[in-house]
Length: 444
Image (cartoon, rainbow, N blue to C red; front, side, top):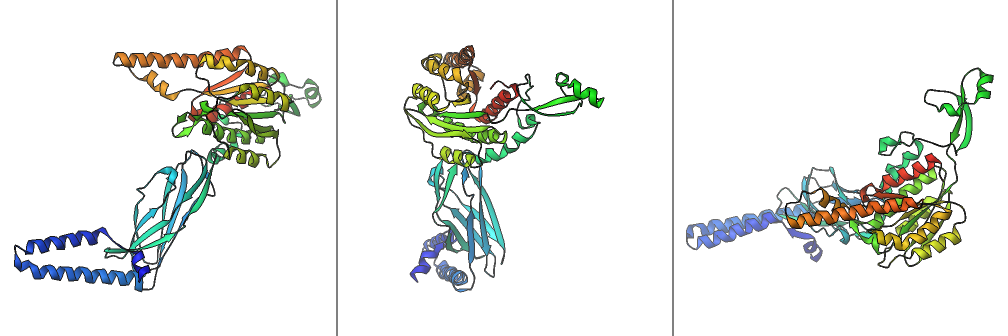
């Protein structure tokens, strides 16, 4: 009996009817002829309530339900969650579904109402967008079932305490997975890079077709075949590419729910995949007060999984990043000339000048690309039309900061350091563009 009461819930319709009957009793005090009719209404309500309780608890039948989640959630992306409900009763049912979503989302208004026919199945889909890596715990999947009378409900619970980890954006990884295999990269928003050098590996001699570079004509083979033949080259392979992520306080700045650190992590995962598909060696490391998460550049089959697991565990801190220690670590542990993609953020030219000696030291032995971020909120201030003195002042300050970002790019270029100044939402495309440009120009 106690178990029955724990599963029994009164619906809103029952309360509305009960309040109506109570109001009739009050009115019957002034109009006694309504008194007996009100009692009949109360008996009818209790009768139908009893009938529905029997239908839900005594009649053979039940409800099956389960929640289907991905094995892992993709950070910063919309992830599909499916709910499946099966009605095994011999009558149609009305359901109210309450899914206990992880605490990180702070959603307490999940209510879905569905009608399911006799012996039928129903499916509901919703999306969640995590903004932090880590473990996400789903609570109970609660299904409140009512008969067509809809006076009371029986509660069913499924999938208690289901944990799903949130990893860096593997959805972006799949989205850009084919980029390494196609020559039409501009279809994905990537720039088409013209190859201006021949620091490439010889592949084969082939017949000339329209569009081939006439500078690659092989005259000896042409004379033998009596038709134009050209040398075909391929990108040089097995080059080392290291992605270096600054996890200091400058990377804690949020944008659209994600920190700059998480944008850098997502971009690193996608870029690592492109690098390996291009037959180069991908490695990574992170730094703040010390250098951590060091993975040597390799192109083995398990490299992507190793990078993914390390990216999953990266946590930011609030310390000032030690570029001097980074310089010493790179000089000690990376002996071959490599492409170093450094994710960090500089807001002022003075901030760059403090770290410039270390960046110049790294660029002396490696090809260094600094990736830092535009301030999107300042961009909105710049584009907004000023209406008063305060807004004019804000607009001027925003333009000053934007100009200083461009000065940082110019300053880096003076010392042969490449840079990518990008908005967080365009980070992945921009760093892939830069990597493919470097490969195409043969400057590594």
